[in-house]
Amino acid sequence: MTCIATPSPRCAVRVAKAIDRAGNARESEGSATVEQADTTNGMEQSQNGPELARVERVVTFGEAMIRLTPPGNERLERTLQLAVTVGGAELNTAVALRCLDVPSAWVTCLPRTGPGRLIERHARAAGVDTSRRASIHVPPR
Figure (cartoon, rainbow, N blue to C red):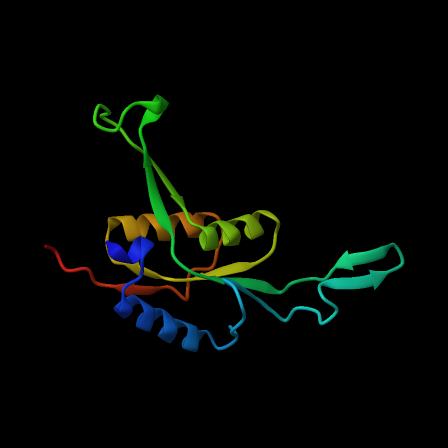
């Protein structure tokens, strides 16, 4: 389960291979890269003044996490239920862009476990392309 928040070296290798397969994903500084962006620093001139350039797709690279929260600010040791929330900066960025009708993809490595499938299902439900996700088998303890 360490792949969810802190990728292991095996996860990093699998993510690197997924990036190589992506073909059109390119390196950039930070956690997101923009493909086929306009070269005018994101601004185009029109009759009504500057406008944001049309972005073909944004690709984010990184991990996600699961937050377990007791309802009603109850103490963790006394609760019988936990609310499950999926998040993480890179995944949240991809989801927010989809809400703005900007196509986005998320490149990551997830374990082939229930929590890993939960995270992927959350991303796909928001419309984020997860086809460049690498999977890793987590042996039972």
